[in-house]
Image (tube, rainbow, N blue to C red):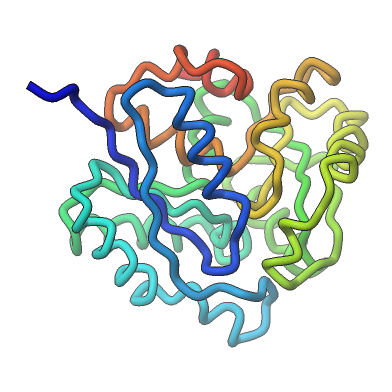
Length: 243
């Protein structure tokens, strides 16, 4: 008999170069878990119609169907588009993925909301690379979902590839800036930021839980499979504390 495997299917923006290595490194800390990726076109994050159209469900469903060929046990959208589109967009997408593939689905943003609810936290520090108007949409949508952002930093970038070029030092400065407001949690909200692996160090520095969106979707997918996430060490309090 072969050893049971946990196969995670990850939907990935085409221009993203951060989430795949980070997700694979995270899964390497989880015995028996592997991540498998399917891309769909995303190059710009803005509120322009063409940029919003990148997140048309049909394009995402085509990628999800390819993941189904690999017999993954769960499909996760490792992306933050519902931050500006509204979380209902992700809820609809998950239902459509499940209808199309028969495989349960979740997203980075829906997982973040669940984590906040499970931990009883309502205030957030928000760190993103996005434009002013995109950031404003996120703040508004989060507030409507019971997540109040009391501090935020953003970089005003719209080219998706460029998010991956943001340095660890700059991210650390942004996290420190929002930590000064003492939110109950901080989210690094963009899956093309090289941030997930820094969560534990930031938590030690600031005493505040860090919920990176590369990590939140993996956490939720593992929980959906009944996986004991507390055995994952080195990736922050999300895995050791939230069940």
